Image (tube, rainbow, N blue to C red; front, side, top):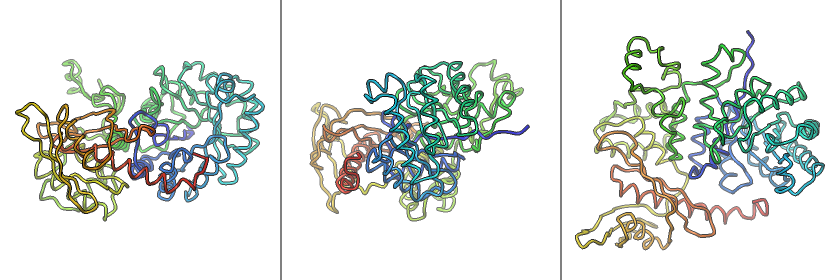
Amino acid sequence: MTQEIIKIFDTTLRDGEQSPGASMNIEEKIQIASQLERLGVDIIEAGFAAASPGDFEAISKIAQKIKCSTVCSLARAIESDVKVAGEAIRAAKFKRIHTFIATSPIHMKYKLKMKPDEVIKRAVEAVGYARTFVDDVEFSLEDAGRSEIGFMKEITDAVINAGASTINLPDTVGYRLPFEIGAMIKTMSQYIKGRAVISVHNHNDLGLAVANSLESIMNGARQVECTINGLGERAGNAALEEIVMTLKTRHDVFGGFMTNINTKEIYPTSRLIANITSIEPQPNKAIVGKNAFAHESGIHQDGMLKNKQTYEIISPSDIGLDLEDTLILGKHSGRAAFKDKLAKLGFHIEDEKLNPIFAKFKELADKKKDIYDDDLRALVTSQISCVEPQFELIGLQLMDCSNGVPSAAITIKHNDNQITDAGIGDGTIDAIFKTIDRISGYSGRLMDYKVTSVSKGKDALANVTVKVVFNDNEPAIIGHGLSIDTMIASARAYIGALNSYLSMEGMLKSRTNDFGDGI
């Protein structure tokens, strides 16, 4: 049987980053893009170049690094957006501009305040301009799930004639049921057969994103837009791992289709992104959840002992999961063995960047008896940063609280000077953060605080994530901190957020003239 390739368009770095709290710095995005390439993703939507200088910078660097996957930037159907997108992906070996405009009556009337013929004109102009930068242009009919078929055909004809080679029909608000999506895709795929590839982008508001994507494939879609761990706005997007493993596992139904995904890279990719974003998949999440291969029922355990296929339709090894999940390395382990282990976990670190990570590993090995793969993943992601730290935690001491007033003494390095100060607060964490504010001269407002255990045991690493607003007119900044001591991890997370804020502030100032009114 001849098999058709279903292209996997990963939008973790664009739509996935729009999950609350999922912001990533440039170096983290490069690491994720590199892992997506190893995973075998066909198209990597690296971001929305016109959204911010940081997005532009990240897309540009990803375009320079990625050699096998197509690198794509999103752009509204606005000339300035398209121009910035084209500039951002200029260095990519394979490049695509993905431009879009809303096509549903409710969006055209209330959001765009445009008539249908004006929308078509804007779409055609955007696609035509995008073709001056790239040969590969994708056009999305935003809110296609609530658009009228007649208008969809009309605008699709126009943008294909203008040069679009992929037509994306997103269920932007996750409203449609599988049979409805299937009927829409069947109608449109038959209408444009041979002229362009049909793509789908399904949101998960009703929990149907994966089902709708699979139904779309059965009815003519040959590209699926999805994210790792199902990240995305609101309830998220269709989960890449679920779509790919369904196609592979249910070959009796989907035998005519295949993907280019190396499924053994699914679990390492999932863990990398969970560590970087600090958004863990729910324990019972299909394929990559903590309990996906756990069997607690006595009946299930008995069956598993006799034949694993009694209760397992997927082998953990199929997705690259090592259930032992331990690292036989310690404080006497060498740099070469350490680097090799990181590579197996999906981290390919340049030699000059490996040294400080290896030093942190040695420190951890002195303090922690058992080091797990998740410890290493957390350790590496905590060190991945393109931000030059203006402030660095040197020491933290919690003061005697016998008088009932929580207090902290902190030493911070800034401009080669060490500054020590102490402060009090309503609680220990509050005292730490207020003291950092006193030393740095920047006052932050804590919006969210989360601490998770990286692995198991009493000596488990604490991974702290904070969301801090340093300027009421600007969005909250995410900071991460890692340590066996939760208080030290909290201080590192807060200082990390401050450093990211200062770096972003500097970048905005340096690139304002480059972007003008496009931002």
